[in-house]
Image 1 (cartoon, rainbow, N blue to C red):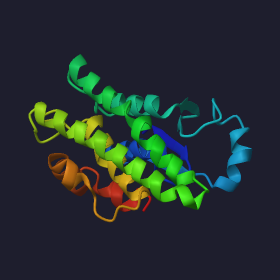
Image 2: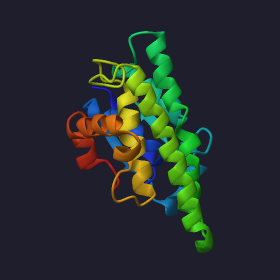
Image 3: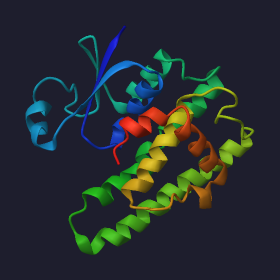
Length: 206
């Protein structure tokens, strides 16, 4: 069996999706969580091609860039769509990550306490905007068992990990999905309780 190692920090961030894929696929993998104190040394060690994480290591070969890793794993474990249109839908979702998680990360790393609440509000509004738009698309696509009909894809794993992680980062006790995206909220709940049950129990950073 192929052995995978995912190198990232002990947070959800850009590793939440590949961790979920590897868990869902029942892969033989290691979740290598790198302490921030070790990062300066590891950054210059040659592990990271662009001096960034995550890095996916497979039998000694290293893969970089989070979305490239996500797509590689999705291809490997049959989580892409049935045709070019469905693959567009999946890739389009992946491209939204920096748009709404960027403000979340800015809030997370802000050192100025006087700006924190305003930054949290800006980030929360951005996340709600994007999940509201994706809710509309899900309805237009037929509101099926999964985002793209009857097959679990990377789209479902992305939606069911990235949005909960964003709301957790922003310290939202009640997931606003129910308010702005009730159909996606049901989809997320279903995926979390079934396909991603092990992931949320073992690998999701709470």
